[in-house]
Every structure is written in C-alpha cells, then in structure tokens.
Image (cartoon, rainbow, N blue to C red; front, side):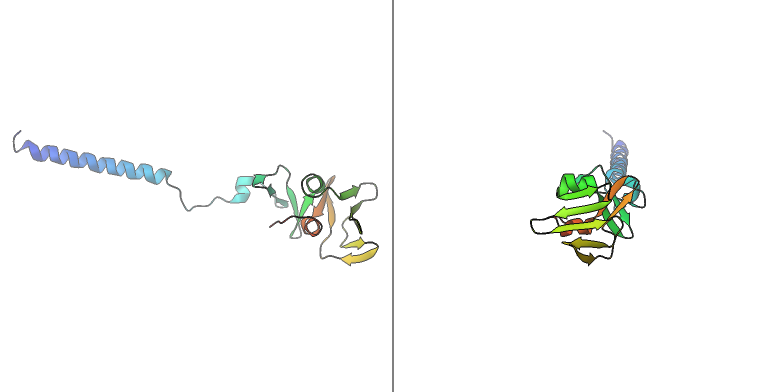
Length: 150
C-alpha cells in the first residue's frame, strides 16, 4: 500500500466512526426515558367529578365521586371490597351500619348521623347520590373500616 492511500483509508475509517457515533447517539436519545410527565387526567380520561380507585396496586373498574373536595365511594364498592356491614335502604333513603353495641344511621345528603339515637355532626354529607348510584364518604367508611386512602 502506498503512502498516499493510507491517509485516505484512515480518513474514511474516522468518518465512518463519526457517522456511527452520531447515529448511535440519535437512537439512544430517541429511546432514553425523559423527565417529561404526562397529565394523569388525560391518561386515565376522568371527568372533573371522578376519582380513580386503585386498590392493592390494581386499578378498580368503578370510579369514585369527588364532591365539594370530599371523596365518595359507591355503595357496591364499599360493601363488596371494604366493609359488608353497611346497608342502604332505597325506600327510606337511609344508610345504616351496625356494630355489636351501636347502630349508626344517616339520611341522604345529611351532615348528621345518629349513633344509638344520639346526633353527631360532620362537615360533609355522609351519603349522596348521583343518578341511581349511592355514594358513601370515604372518610366515613374509614371511620368504621380497616382501610387507608389518600
């Protein structure tokens, strides 16, 4: 090989290495995780008055209700997944909960509930309805159930 061809080959190899580095950097940049965060309401497609329920690291099919800054769980979710001792009387529109020594009752959209007939006050309606679905305040369910939420 002559001395004149050696710089040409060396230049071609260097150019080829530079092209490979540029392509590699572009591929790495394209597939590298970014710090950009997607809006969760856009990702989960929730209405303004809905809250996503995640139980035991799984997304629950039913959505909770957000009303006046308070979270409300639908009656079926409460009785199926959290506490079977809640009872909704659709004729009287009364929610009842019983323990061995207490009977707790509240009316629809009332900020009061009764424990063995004695009136207690809350800063939120304990039970509300949206359409035909009954919702119970998560704070109230937590008070009488072994659960945590945030």
